[in-house]
Length: 552
Image (tube, rainbow, N blue to C red; front, side, top):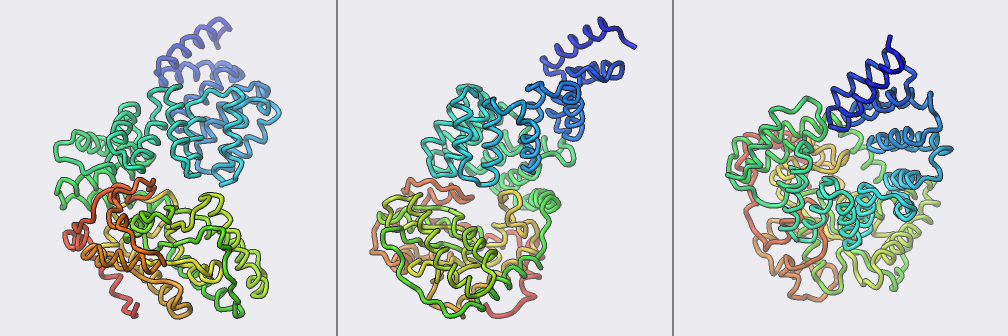
C-alpha cells in the first residue's frame, strides 16, 4: 500500500522520466501507482500514452478506457485516445470513438480534424474543408497541416500541398511525416536535389521509420559507397519480427543491391519484402478471375447500345492502361507532352462510377440506361478537375478491365494498351512495392504469372467484342525506335504531331507513379531483357506462365 504522498512523489518521478523520453522507467513507476490504487486516472492516462507510443494498441486502449471511466469529461483523455485510433488502418475504429467523444470534444478544433481524417480515408469530398476548419479555428498542428497537404496533392494542387508541408515544418521543423511527404512531392515534380535533402532530413529525424529509406532509395541510383546501404543492412538485421513497414526496408535494400551490381543479393531482399507483404495482404487468384468473368457477363447481357456524341465542351479522355510496370507512365508522358493534352495520371475516377452503376442496375435494361450516365458523370469530373482542357490522359491501370464499358460510356475516348515482355514485366512488378492492399498478386512470381494470363484473356475478350475500341503499343518497340513509334502513338489518339512529344523528359508535369524518376530521363534500353540476369530466380514465373499456352 502507498500513501497519498508516496503516490504523488512517484507520479512526479514518473512524469519526469516520461518527459525525458525514458518510457520504460516511467511505465514501471505508473504501474506501481496503479497496483496500489488503480483509480488514479492520470496514471491510467499516461500508461495509455506510453503504450500508444510503443504501438501496443490493445494495452493503450485498456488504459484509456480505464481513465475515461474515472474522468469521462476530460478532453485530454479523449484526444489522446482519438489520436491513437487515427493511426490505425481500420478507420471505423476512429469513427466509432469520435461518436463517443462528441459530447466532450465537439467544440474543439481537434474534433473537426479527426472528422476530416475519417472523411479523407473514405474519399469523402468534405475532408479538406473539415481539416481547414480545424486549422482556422485554432488547431496549430504539424500533423493537421501535413494531412491537409496530402489532400491538396490528391486534388492535383501541387503548390498548395508544398505550402501545407512547409507550414507543418514551421510548427515542427524535424517532423519526419511532413519531410517525407515533401520529399515525395519534390520527386514527383522532378526536383530531385530538394527531394534528397528532405528525405535525408526525414531519416535523420526518425531513423527507425523504414519507409523513409525506401523513399531515399527511389530517388536515384545508389552508389556502392553510400553509407545508407550499410545502415539499412544493420537495421534489417536488428529489426524485430513484425516491425511496421519492414518490407519497405527490404525493398530498399533490393534496389540498393541492383544499383551496385550485386545481382546475387537482389532476390534475397526482394523475397523477404514480398514475403512480409503477402502475409499482410494475401491474394486469391480465383476472386480476380471471377470478377473478370462477372464483368464480361454483365457486358454480354446488355442489349445493343446506341451511342451518342459526347459533350464537346468537356475534355476528351485518353486512357493509357496495361499491367503495372509495363511502360504506361512513359506512354502517358509522351502523350501529355502535347500542348492540347493535360496529364491526369492515375485519376481513379471512372472505375468507382462504373462499379456503382453495375451494383445498382438490377437488370440489363436499367444498366443500358445507366452506362451513358456513367460517361456523363466521369466527364463532368474531368471538366471540374481540368477546366478548359481539350484532352486529359487517364492512366488508371485497371481500365483495361472495362474497355467495352468505356467505349459505350465515353464514345470518343481514346484507349491505349501498353504491352511489355512478360518476364521483364514480371521482374519489375516483383521488384517494386505498391500501395498497401493493392496489386496483391505482385508478391509471388507464380501469382504474377496467373494474373498476367488473366490480363491477356481479358484483352482478348475486348478485342473480340469491341475490336475498334483500343490500340496497342509494345514497350520494347517504343524503346528501340522512339520517333516513329511516338508519332504513331500520337496519331492513334487523334492528334497532330508535336516535337515536344519526343522530348517528353522535359515535361514538368507532376508524376505520382513508381516511374516518376525514369520519365525525367531520355529513353534508355537497359531494362529490356533485364530478367535474364535473374533467370534462375525467375524460374517460378516462367514455369507458371508457360503452363497456359492459350494464344493471346
